Length: 447
Image (cartoon, rainbow, N blue to C red; front, side, top):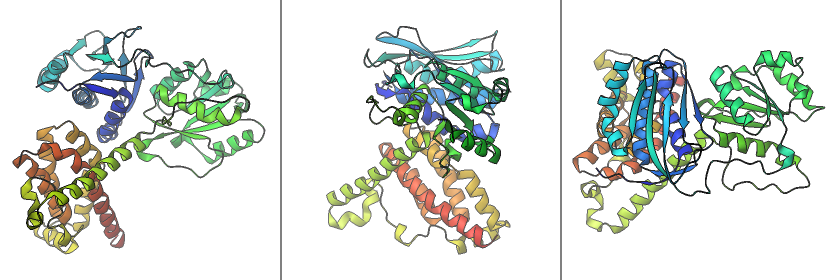
């Protein structure tokens, strides 16, 4: 198959992968951190779908086989990135044996590696697994350099505290890129005399926030200009309506995140100089990126329906699926959640309907992200299995609209219409939200 190369932002790829692996990360209790060489350009040219597939498979394999609960994906590149260079994606000290690693290369990613002209290697001494992929540079002037736009943003002191050692070390490295003085952890804070007033920025993981810390931060802020930043997982992020919180930093954190954070924190403090920052580059928020992608696919779905309806002869508009495009046919009478039907099916199976509903919520939580990613990469067997499982589980609880949607997804293979898959990610996202709402309402009423 011919490679389809295009320009893409490597940050967006890494965030998509981070999101797609959320379920397995939580199941295995793994903290994932990206460590990106500053020489790697933001925008690259390559086969982005294949790159996403390989890196997702690589991390999935590591998560499922490593004894470590903290994993760092290093992105390495030559100091001087020329027109075309290879970037190496590597995980060190995996604790995975050679035979298992080589078997993974051969059975899971060999065809895609060949497609990318990439190589996979295993290092015995450190149990390091690495994949090296060649990329072209879009523009020699578009290298990954971050220069703070005002001298008033330099020379800051940072205290950062996180439950994860690798997250703390990663953040420390990224702040030090700007020559900031960084103290990491409670012990370093104590060595400084437990004096929060000496810091300009205090970064704290949200799960460690206590009323005592809140009170301390507010007390210091009364006399000193302390910026208090909450570090959050995107999937559990919430905006605290508290004035003492200066900003939020959402995982996965990358160098660009820290750059934008610093600008956002101190731009109002600079009165005499105009700060120039890149337009359209907010603090990287993975959740916002994902929701924007869903919104676009939802809009594409609606637009496709409108165009299809306008072009179709009047007498054929009720037979639209025979034209190999999605329609709403039959859905006007279908219920989001037909409780009566669900209760009947549960009774036939001899199971509790509430348990069936809980099982559906657990099984398909965040499945819209998963479906979007496998649809984007056209992972045929994964999509087929997903549609079959979705139809079966939805039918068991009486989710009529979801059953019809699963049937339509399956029919795309029958009509060889896989180009429509991206459109269905938005449709599925909408239907899943509606169904989850109805399920949660029912469970609440019958709890």
